Image 1: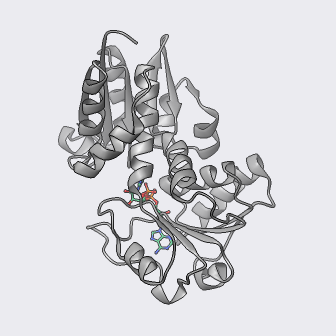
Image 2: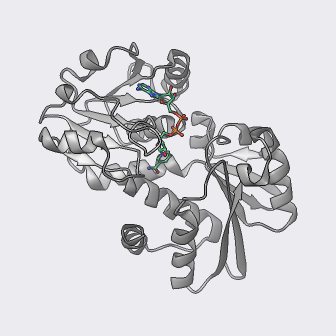
Length: 282
Ligand code: NAD
């Protein structure tokens, strides 16, 4: 689309986010006028309950759209006019587009993980997959995995209500025989005979060091995908490599969700490989 684009990122503590650089560089390469601003709830001193006010302000000021992240991916939904099918099934939105007087919510974390897995895990078995973490990222991953053909997904979360809700929502959409919740302490049993594991808890980030997966449970027949991407090489990925597992880091999911958001915002096709190279250089 011609003209200028103004995009905002709404979330708490988003100072280190690479999204502004990633989006603005790609827009520059494509010759688009494009500004990507942080709207940090912490810096603005407003709580997550004010996300509706921020949305209204952005709409009024002529923003093209918003990316939305922790802790308002769910809360933003009450303030939108329509949702993509994915966002509705997941109950989480990471991209809002203002168009024709309406605010429409999308979830490009799901499409981002799907594209990352189809590239980085091409040919891998998906018959039995274990998902650890049923929060915002985990829900997107679950939708993506079932969408690309995972046979059966077992979801584990310390918060049993969260995994139960996710299993219920995705089971209704994809078939109840394809997704089940496991007990929080049931990781060893779930991984026994599994083809792959996706880790989608915050463990492994600088603020939450360590790994949620005992290394002794990793075996060479298991592929391991990580959603954490800050740092790119987590303790889990290091242990998985050492155990001989095929691995996928969280970086590509992060880049591909930006690719898909950028396309929604501008209508222009970004160069995904160029954005991946830029991400690696950041
Ligand atoms: P969240 O808080 O919404 O969900 C995390 C879930 O993990 C919670 O339900 C929690 O109960 C569960 N959990 C925590 N520790 C656990 C453990 N030891 N065992 C089982 N369950 C456990 O967080 P989120 O928004 O889903 O983010 C999770 C991670 O994903 C963060 O590191 C975030 O940066 C990353 N992320 C990456 C991408 C990407 O594009 N790569 C996108 C979104 C989020």
